Image (tube, rainbow, N blue to C red; front, side, top):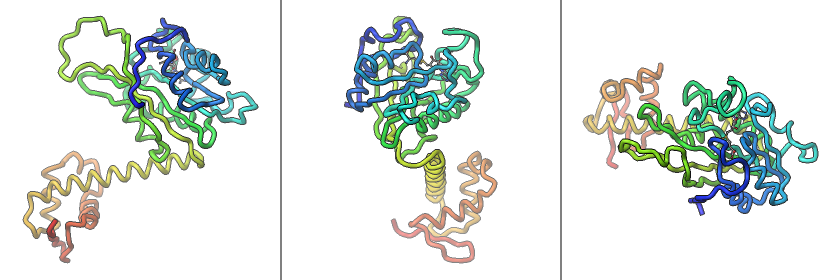
Length: 299
Ligand SMILES: C[S@@+](CC[C@H](N)C(=O)[O-])C[C@H]1O[C@@H](n2cnc3c(N)ncnc32)[C@H](O)[C@@H]1O
């Protein structure tokens, strides 16, 4: 089942904690993953740990509001000694960027490392990636780490936070994406002008299985993923440009076509001409004729 809907939140945690999660979501995940040890490094009102303890799961809840900072403190060092530095499941439910501001509004004083106080979506994703690698580090081999996250719109732009964060994490470890219907969101009862693309009424749960390998393994995976995406985008741009060129063309014609079609993409790259020559060489439908001349072969 990859679509979850729990209209009730249940008795766990605190229903008045802004941005709290239904305890039934955790109950479902615990039934699915059967952890014996569980850590939530952004526990908020304690919904997840209440559910875990009720089920006899050894649980640790940490949060900035009680002095644990997932951006600076090692989660693995905050676990009980008999866990040997790793949990079966390490799942977070971070702020959805600035949808609810926590420090200074829900609790205590404004804190610079509060994820809800990031100045931009990019800053939020970069810091959240650090928190997730910290979670990964505190997860035993073949244990599960992940997060529950919602998307939001700012100034008309859709910030797909739950998708975008996945680019920072090893795709080889990704095991499941669950969609959770959002019930009882604060805005649900209010009257809104019609939204062109509708309201966001779901959250996403992304689960990863921690494989062997330290943080550099995770970094290597993320870099390789990004190189694949970048190479794929160059191929797509070039193929689109080649559609306008004669069957036999010169490299100068390819440069001009790309410059014309994708000036921003080109301005971003210092070595765009070399990139075009390299990408041409990687397209199976293009054959080099020598002296800067190329030919589009039959598809
Ligand atoms: C969406 S709430 C969690 C709600 C929780 N699932 C519940 O049901 O009550 C997000 C939590 O992340 C915490 N948080 C924000 N930045 C953090 C950081 N750097 N380290 C640890 N916790 C952080 C906030 O204090 C807040 O309690």
